[in-house]
Image (cartoon, rainbow, N blue to C red; front, side):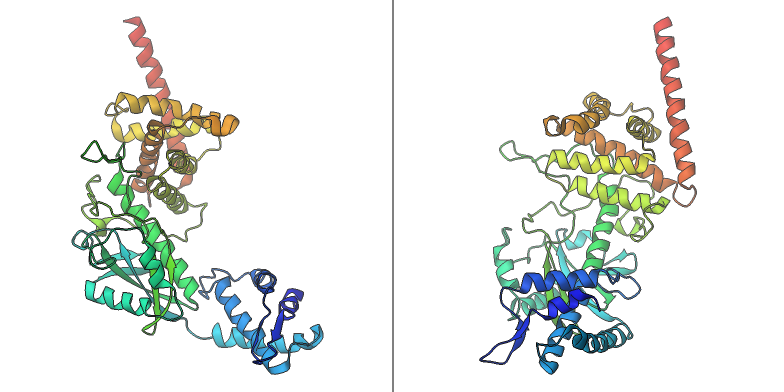
Length: 431
């Protein structure tokens, strides 16, 4: 038995007046640290076969240690505890992991008008289905009235400006996802990941080639602080067998948005349901893994308020897809991918061309000068366009090429482009 389990057990006591057995007041941090540390070393966190998390295991082992203390007392030696603990551990694994996972239902709002969102959207291993306002309100009331949750207080404190009832405006669509899991934390994390990944895929096509954030129609209003607010919901509600389990807040400072998609940038994409999906669990070193990692970086970039942090996110995607460790070649490959779709950048505005030319220099400045380096909107916008080009190229060739094929195409494409530019310049000088 890991000695950290015994250390956690020693922090359990029996209240003198009531006889209740619990973790001693003031000992909770040490109890949690030891128990989590021992559980972490079991190596089962986010196990997709067992569909569990360390938090779920922590809950089971916490209950197990309390039950041992209630039955056998709080003064066992380490050797005495070891036998009881092994029995309890075997019971947890056989009874919990030896049975099929439960079905959890997660319901949540997204800031998109329901008429502009499909009735059903694929989420890789699951799907998100729209529910109507009456169904949503029923779930909301159950969560608000739960005595063991502070969800009603959380909802009251949300900064959004609603009319009659929170989340009852028509800017919202309400979704439901069912997920197989052995603990609610796995279901929450898994659905959250899949929703984030799906929004990344959707937003990529929705914002493809957009070179600047939307601006308000009135000059006396501040510009939008990020490209899109089509992102994860402000919270998730989770239910099991019709009973409310818990909620998970995601973004407290969530504001109203335009609420509509304009997916019309790719010839083969007419609506959200047509947008391709990728395996979130794909090995990060594979072709598909590159796409997923870059899409998540893209999603961070277009939902980030800070220009600097948005630039970093787009740059992270460029680093992934440029498929080279040479910083000097990353921007070159991004520029080639962009010109591959845009006929040698002739469609770009001059200020964006200048910003793209400065990006490589800015990356070097950031390495050596850090916070002193100025990153303005043009650099962020230019980095996004480079990532647009690389991502679309990878997606276009998905299923046809492997990473070696893409690396060769980018490498020789840059070399060809440089030769063309050299000859063009030479002929211009000679004429």
